[in-house]
Length: 360
Image (tube, rainbow, N blue to C red; front, side):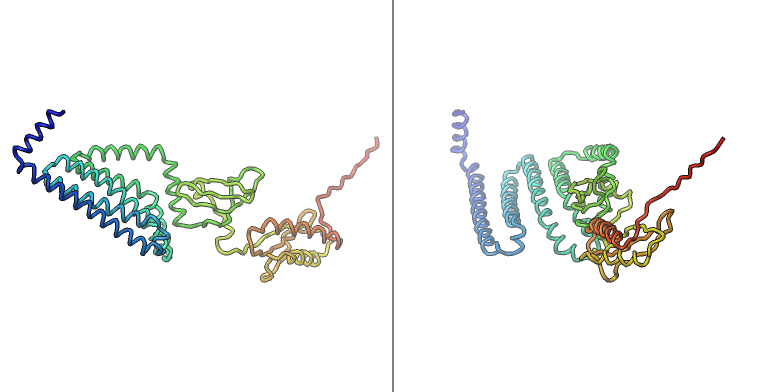
């Protein structure tokens, strides 16, 4: 090792003009890079002190860090390209630019993840169409995969690798994965359609058809994902339903139009009872609840003539759909008590048996 270093030193001493120019150029470029790096950092610190309290930077704390990272990578790119061009190293130059493409891919990914949410809050929410919201959500979820795949392809192309076989293999692999994961892809497509159609929003109360036995059959939408939707029932049970299953069924949404819904309660009375009096009692009981609307007020109609009872139906508008079960329970209990006081019978099926005795 010492002999090799001595030989190099002797060559430099014997031909100083050959080594001096590259050495001085390298030192000059590196010192210039250090100086530019130092100036850039000072400028970024001043910008952070002056504009750090701006709402844009407060909501996106990593935005300044992204600018700083971009500036550093730009300095490295310029310095590296300058040195490699001077020393005429084509192989090293290709490897360097391939690595820089991968580094710049990380910058592009961070920039997309920063600016897409800003674009959604500033632009998409102001439009009446839901298509732009869907496109931004999809871009946010799949931006990293797209950016790094494109970066890898460009890096391989810069090195000189033929990417055609890779693209052909990726196409075949994509078809195979598509067949193997058709259920997942179906859920993804259904998730996109749910986001576009908007049959329900987060916070809406909908009917749940996959609820466990003897549990609540409706709940509030917690999250609408690309693959599945989460619903929390009134029993505080979270049910995750694949989007493909949701798109196959009727969706019953209690809060899509407004918070007002009508509750129907069947009540039977005896044929001998006073129908008008029974109707008045039911309407008065319904108005005892604060969330029952007075305009339009409760209405009781004769629904049917049953085998042993006159079937009435109380139709009551309430202000809060989450009070539906409470409304039914309260009115049922109170109507039974008021009917007992008023002497109105709630009948039940009766059978009369005649026993005939035959004599020999």
